[in-house]
Image 1 (cartoon, rainbow, N blue to C red):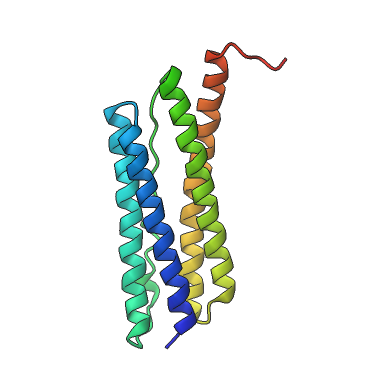
Image 2 (cartoon, rainbow, N blue to C red):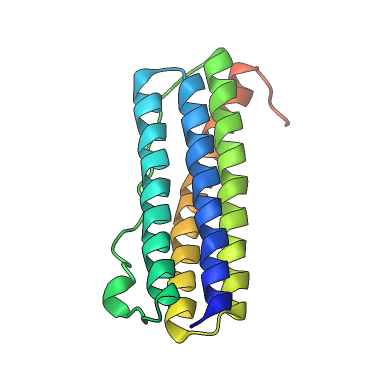
Length: 161
């Protein structure tokens, strides 16, 4: 049994639950129905990741190994676009994306660090896949954050040059 790997997966599960709770909270403050729906989809995705990690931790706990089929690389994350918003809603969007970026970065770094600590080669591969998923989220959030940040500056009639 790979006790260390199980502990690494348990922390990953907690990270996914924290992400889901953040997206649910953000959805409750979202400026429109499209945003609420998209944020709830992200929360649901985080919970699917939680269930996935839990099932793999349970396999390791029972002495089973997991294999390539268990490591679902095709379950790559999806991202949404809020469309154009202004004023307070725009500020909220910038804030949500900023926090979301930090959460995804934290998770990505956790999975990369955990990969170095893992004992089982399958766990190492899994942790790399999870880090890659978080990187996709981070990169997409960064693009959207930049769009909304620039839109916010435009709305504020601010030009640094």
